[in-house]
Length: 113
Length: 109
Image 1 (cartoon, helix red, strand yellow):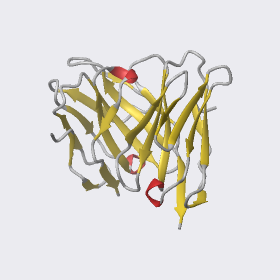
Image 2 (cartoon, rainbow over the protein chains, first blue to last red; image 1 turned 90 degrees about the vertical axis):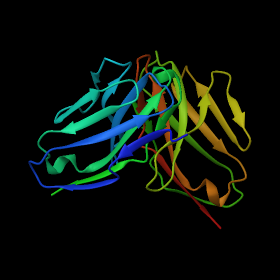
Image 3 (tube, each protein chain N blue to C red; image 1 turned 120 degrees about the horizontal axis):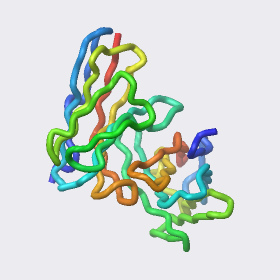
């Protein structure tokens, strides 16, 4: 049972480049999330998807887009990367919303130069 | 004011000691409360949920005080393997979890 799988694990981008972070879960969870983690800031929610076919903005959505491709997959896209988007990105999933345990992927360490 | 606030530490505690962390939250309508653990350069993982009546899991005890809007985590007989960052997490009655910035704990041999 793989749980939540994120790719890539590491990435270096130049300012202005675009990329998509992939996330897949095999636990049949309804809810999926993208967080970023910065020193001293904790985990901040970028976007979430309460169920297949829906997406909503979180605390820090600017500069990002998401796609809930199907129940398993939830991708995060940076259209024009900026140095301020240097961070560790975590994808997570839960059975149903914020009342249930969230399972996290291993994270993507992104550096924008 | 942050919605979920924690003392960032670091807490440096000798092995075998008892250590306690507090966390305050801003919304009295908050519904669910959790403690997550995050090891260095790893993903967060659920340590325990926090119930209104308080709950215990081995050496770990979690308490909720709704009147004062805080939750606590007590670790007894601390082990070297308890060294980690402990994240206070609250569900404010919506679909998402809000994380505190975490409290870093180091257990000293």
